[in-house]
Amino acid sequence: MKKIVSWLAGLALTGAVLVAGIGLFWFFGSTNYLLTGVPVLNYHQVNDKFQTVLTMTPADFEEQMKYLHDHDYHAITQDQFAAYMRGEGSLPDRPVMITFDDGYVDNYEHAYPIMKKYGLTGTIFLIVDLMETPGYLTWAQVQEMGRNGMEFGSHTMSHKPLTSFDRQGVRTELRESKAAIESHLQKPCKYIAFPEGEFDDMVMEETRAAGYEYGFTVETGRDFPWDDHFDLARVPFFEGPDSFGHFYFRLNFSTLSSWLWRLHKGLEAREATRSLAVFVPEP
Ligand SMILES: [Zn+2]
Image 1 (cartoon, rainbow, N blue to C red):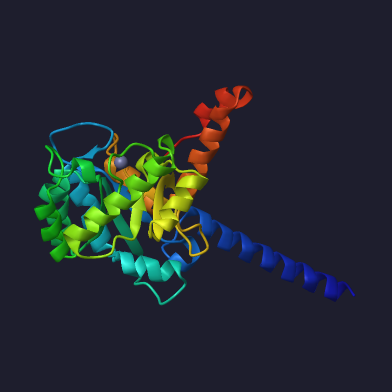
Image 2: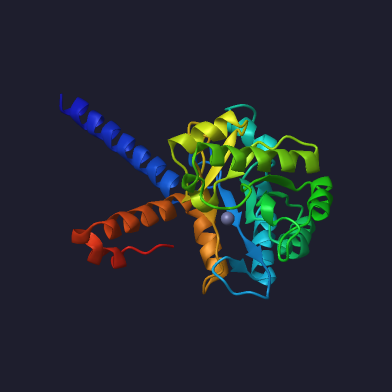
């Protein structure tokens, strides 16, 4: 009897250690996408001229792309991501999808040559009304990048949050941007990044009806096949005081990062807990 009890205790302990180990592995790191999901990296501007919260210097951007290349990460295409989300096929080791929002001209001038150097490709979400205006991409640049492995998606016509329009307005923003991108690239446009990450039920309905298949927000986290395909998290990167440290932490510990952000926001949202928010970092 005593033997059985100690045997059962041993089994329970082993099980607990295993479960805890898998839990820690899941939440705090690892590069096994089947366990931890696919990180969709999100950048904006890459240049030396501006210093806004959205700008990263080309030197820092290059350091990050070099890290991905040297550590055997693989930039996956839209089709590969879609197959993964449908639960089909398999991805290369350490998959990442690299994305840029807004369609800044510096994506062509700085980011694209750096990515090319390290054999990486990505998706740029275009604001169609701003194409061909100062600071933004031209269609010729988009087409050239498109011939060299870069892909594109919609960031709507005007970049105003879709929740600020009525149904007809949402429809126009979604459909006209999709049609413009498709006519310039001669390829279906299946991806959208919602301006400011804003959406509601009506926006979702219209996005689906317009023929999009995947929608990204600005929530931090990784993506799994069972996630809502129109409410997909990304891993945003900003310059900050320690660009590489920030990049390294978020790339490896995206789940922990998203946890902390949510906890911070949750505490901040209530009067009673607001003072506690400062104790929760937002790495
Ligand atoms: Zn944007």
